[in-house]
Image 1 (cartoon, one colour):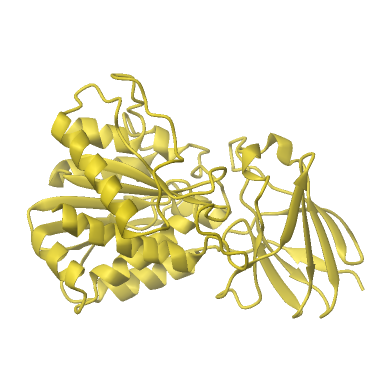
Image 2 (cartoon, rainbow, N blue to C red):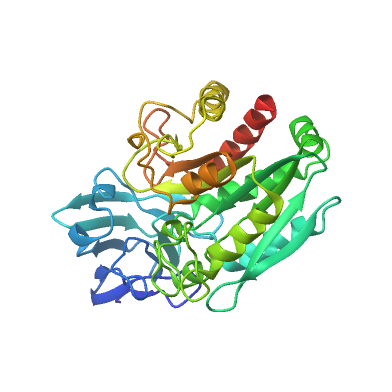
Length: 369
């Protein structure tokens, strides 16, 4: 019996090149109107006991080839609990091996966060006491850019995620943040809601998310290179969020992402902005050091190089917000691979750890304020 493979569902992405028995040759479809590709998500129908051998080819020219060595694919039988598979990478081919324990297996680059789950999240949080819902605008395909607001304080805090839709760990982080902030018994949440007004956008790129893109929206545009001059025809998602930020102002901001190559959680800041203030930078570094003290899942050794003075890329949200508002803004990156300093061979970096990291970030913000 030959296995079957399908990706015709929310966030699905795979191309079947050939099937033979329990083996398959596969490739990844590029983002629409773009050369980016790295995200995959598909299901395998098979027989219990099948020795699956799946080869995803053509990865030497993928968006981040350095992301494949040391990476293990994610899988689930029930789409709730995700685990890592026996995976190796050589000469542009990712080889996945697994003995099937049920007749259907889902495989993905990271545990997916579907648009249906997104709508469930919005519905559940919007109904919580003290929460206000706003639709800031719509994507190019007409999907809502959802924003949840809460808190009675004067400090304006913006949390936003999934500018890059394939970085699904970002919305798992958001789920954890919203669970904590709406918990009436949580002391950090109670203190933060008194100090801050939160504006939370769990998914800035719903079109790319649904289409199974790695990095771009429907028009093939990388939203995190649009913040200096977003337009209605290329990046309405950024335009509507930035317009709302202009209305409220921004004091603190966190842009939530995933990194393909670096096996760690880390922050990227705004060191190179033209109007950098000493107190602005001091607050960022204090947050970074406090977060490292609050959770062993975060570290400060690995990360991106800082921009030289005055050379920051202001098309990116973190630097644009720091320059535009004098905000303490930051990008938090989580790994597609396992966390080097605290590995988990069974699950690797997981949805559960994303959510716990969000809890630590919010507790740290409470300390900073």
